[in-house]
Length: 301
Image 1 (cartoon, rainbow, N blue to C red):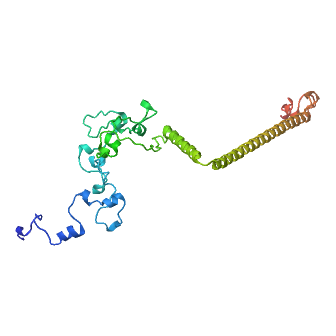
Image 2 (image 1 turned 60 degrees about the vertical axis):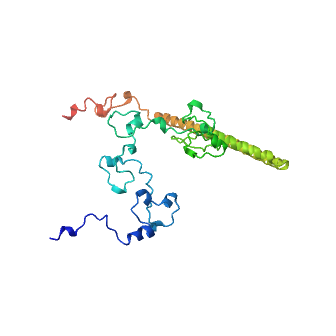
Image 3 (image 1 turned 180 degrees about the vertical axis):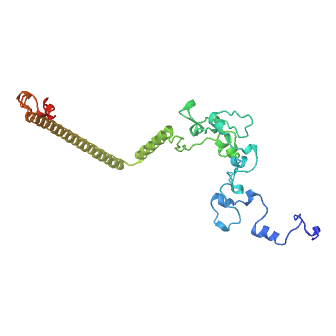
C-alpha cells in the first residue's frame, strides 16, 4: 500500500507556471459569476461570438428571484436554471394568494407579500404637470417638490434625486391590460397634429394656400359625387329587390290557385255513386257490395 504522505489533499498552496499566463494574457481567472459575463453581449455589441472568453447569457438579470421549483425539490435544470437556487428571504417569489385576493391565511408563508398600490404605475401626465382625470385616474399621482438644480440645467443626482424632475416631452400612447388606448393621450396627440398642420398652413405663402384650398374643394366635390352615386346605386338595388319579391309573391299565389283548382278537379272525378244504386252479384239485392254481403259467408258451407 502506498504511503499516505505521497498524496496531498490541499492543493491551494501549489501553483503552476502557466497560471499567470492564463490570467494575464487570456483573461481566464477565478472571478465571480458577474465578472465572467460578457458586458458587450448584454449591450448587444459583442462580435466574437462563440470565441468570446466570457459567458454569453441573457438570464443573468433574471436571477433575482428564488426558483419556486427548487424550494420544493422539483427543479430539474440544476445549474442551467435561470432562477436562484438558494434560500434568500429577500429574493423569494411573490405570494399568489396575496396578489390575487389581497390576503394570505398562512402565518408561516415564506413568499413575498407585495402591496398592490406599489404596483400601480406613475401617471406620466401628472408628472408632466397636469392630469385631466384627477383623482379618478387609474395611475398613481406622486406629488414631488420641483428640483431647482434640474430647472437650472443639471442635477448631479439624476434619477436618484428625491425631488421632481418635470418632463416636457409628451407621453407615448400606451395600451392597458384590456388592449385599450388612453383616450386622453390619443385625443391630445390628434389635437397636437391638427394644430401643427394649421400652423404650417399659416406659414405658407398666399398662392400656395389658394392652390391648397382649390385642391381641397375639388376633393370635397369628388367625395360628394361619389356619395351621391353610392346612394343612387343603393336605391336602384333596393327597387330591384322589391320588384323580385313582388314577382315571387305573385308566382306563389298563382301556384296556390293552380293547386286548389287541381284538387277540386280530382274531387269531381272521384265522386262515388250511392249504395242504393249498387247491386250485389252474390245475392242480387241492392244496398251493399259483394264483399259486404251478409249471405255470402253462409253460402260457403
